[in-house]
Structure formats: C-alpha cells, structure tokens
Amino acid sequence: MDSWRNRAFNKVLFRIMRQRLAGCNTTQEMRDLILSIDNYGALISAPKGMEVIPTKFAHIPCDWVNMPRSSGSKIILYFHGGGFCFHSPKIHGAFLGRLANATKSRGLMVDYSLAPENPYPTAPDECFAVYRALLIQGYLPHQIVLAGDSAGGNLAMTTLLRLREANLPMPAGAILMSPVSDMAVTGESAFKKCKDDPFFDLSTLLLMRNNYIGNQNPCSPDISPYYAKLHDLPPIFITAGTEELLMDDAVNLAEKIGEDGGDVTINVVKGVPHVYPLFYQLSEAREAIKLMAGFINDKYKSAKSEQKKAS
Image: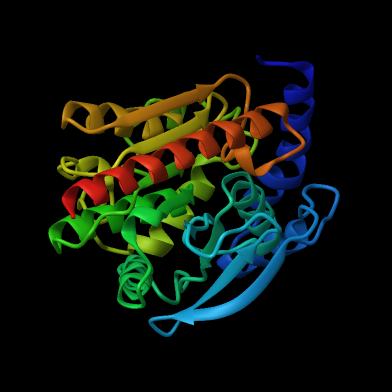
C-alpha cells in the first residue's frame, strides 16, 4: 500500500539522492556522493552479527557476507547496483546479510570493475568468471542463487545468458531488483516518471549508461537482456516499484521471459522507489526479503530434487 511513510521516505530520498546526483557533472562526483551516503548510518544499518570477509575468485575481488545462520553450502552470488559506475558496499552488504540470514546462506558479493575506466564488457566478463570459479572450486550449481539490483540485475541476467550459451550448469534461480534490462530506454516509465523518481533523473541514468556502453549498440543482447532470447533459464523472481524510471524494464523483461516459456515471478509494489528492498526501514522492503527468501528456499529444494533425479 502506498502509505504516508513511503511518501515521506521518497521525499527524503529525493533530497539526498536525486537532487544531489543531478548536480554531479562527473562520475567521480557521483562516486563521492554515493560514498558519503553509504557512510550515513541513519539511512541503512548492518544487521547484527554480519561478518564481511574479503576474498578473490578468478582473481576478482569479492566479499563473503556471513551471518550467524549462514551455511557453508548455500550461496547467494550477488552483483551490486550503482549504474555500473559506483558501489555502496555498506548498503548492499546490509541487504545481502539480511537475505543470507533469512535463507541460511552465505552471501558472496562481486566487486567487479567499474565504468568508465572499465567499460563493457569488463563487468559481465568478471561476473561470469566468478560463477565459473565457484563451479571449478566444487560449489554445486543447485546450491547457488544469483541476485542483483539495478545494474547488478542486468549482470545477473547476462551471466545466465552466457551460462546457457556456454552449456554450463545453471544456478537454482535468480533474483532481480529493479533490473536494467533495456539500455535503449524504450520503456514508457522512463519518461512518465522522469519528474517523480526519487532516486535519479533521466539525464543521470543516461550518463551512467553511456559510461558503461560507450559506442556499443544498446540493443545488443549481451548489454540489454530484454533483446535476448530468454528460453532455458532457471526460475527468476523480479521486483520493482511504481515510482521508478526503470519499472517498465522489470515488467517488460518479465513478460518477455514468460513469452519465451520461462518460469518468472513479477512483483511490482505501489509507492516504493528504485531498489526499494535495500531500504530496510520500509515495511515493503522487509516483506520483499520474506518473499525473496521464500523463493530462494523453494528453488534450493527444487534444484536439489532435480539434481538427485538426474544422478
């Protein structure tokens, strides 16, 4: 439900995020802003007992995010958002910790290289390499779930598509929060919500996109999963809010997956902003974590059952 709390939160987010991002003229200015917000403890706080351990897979920096209920066998492989240009490790880590705790999993967040210093295809290459490294080191695909928000949702989809083309074992499922799926920006919400989105405006979105793709074709399936053939993928859970530019990226991607015969669940929540599950103070975010945890636990069980049948 679109509550007064949501409207109040959106107004705060508009001031501390959208207005300040719109005033940034360079990527470095955006990074400095996001870093200051990430260190602002009142916006988000880590759950009790969370432990972050730096590591590497395929020589790519990652962070284990462990909770008291984490198991060593189940992994949420997480690709953070940030427009492919920046990272807010405390906010993303806190979310991942809560989701890991709710599913008795370990979180593994990939610290992929950022644009514009490292434009496409560096980030998807690294995300794919980390998943392959997990398999090589003996982690079982039916005990891995991919997850990502915004740009990270794009990278999760790209990783699935690359796994399919490489004929490698798929994870148990994937969770996409406000995913970037159409770099050509053809969704109506990008224009209808351009004045209302409390997170960023269209010019900021295009700046981040251009940093990432440069002169590449925005309709390339490896850049915009919406334009790919979306068959033979594992179950996918997608969520987005009605107050965001990228709502149609989520809705249209879900429709395309369904049309191509995929198992997809779409959850569009009224009144909430971009990547709303990250903001735990919202009741809708807490409810989203419950839904995602239920999805993950169900897919762990289903994939394990299929694994046993195959063997």
